Amino acid sequence: MTVARWSWLGDRLAIDVANTVRRRGWRYVELITSPEDLRTWLEHERNRLAIPAPVDAALVSRFLPVRDHVLGVLRAAAAGEGLPAAEVRAINELAIAAPTVRLLGSRPGHQLTWPVTAADPATRLCADIAAATIDLLTGSDATAVALCDAPGCGQLYLRGRPNQQWCNPHCGTRARSQRHAERLSGQT
Image 1 (cartoon, rainbow, N blue to C red):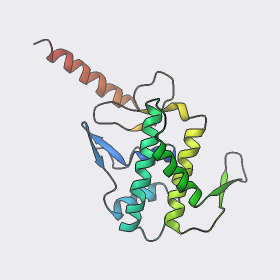
Image 2: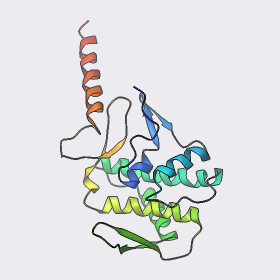
Image 3: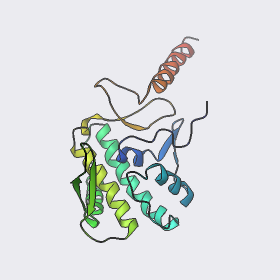
C-alpha cells in the first residue's frame, strides 16, 4: 500500500509542522527538501496559514529551523519531559516577532486573527507556527501529545484516550506483528 505524501495532515497545526519529518524504518527522513515541497505542504495548510510569496529557498531555510524547534518541544512533551529551554526561547521569540490577537468570528467555533504588528509574510508564517505551538502546549491537549512508536511511523499525534499507544489502528497492527515476528525468531 502506497501512502500519499501528505495523507496524515489535518491534526493540530503544530503537529502537522513537526510531522514534516517522517520515519522510514528507524531512520528519519526530511520531507521539506525544496521550495516545491514547502509550497505543497502550505497548500494543504492554506486554511490555517497564509502562504507567503514567493515560496523559495529562503523561505525553506526559515521554515526548517522553526519546524525543528516545534519538533523539539513536542517530542519532549510526548515523552513527559520538561521542554528544552533553548527551543522554548526560540518559539517565544518567533511569536513575539509578529504577534496576532484572536477575535471572535460570526459563529461558534469560528475564530479570526488580526496582526498586531506589521511583518513580512515569512516572519508572519514563522510567528503563526510558533503561536500554534504555544496554543497546543498551553491548552487542554498539552498532555495528550504522543509519539507513535510503531515501526516506520514515529509521528506525533494527540491521544484520544489515556492508554492509546499508536496514532492509528494500522500502526498498532504493524507494532503487534513486529513483536510477534520477534518472538518467533527468538524461538529458533
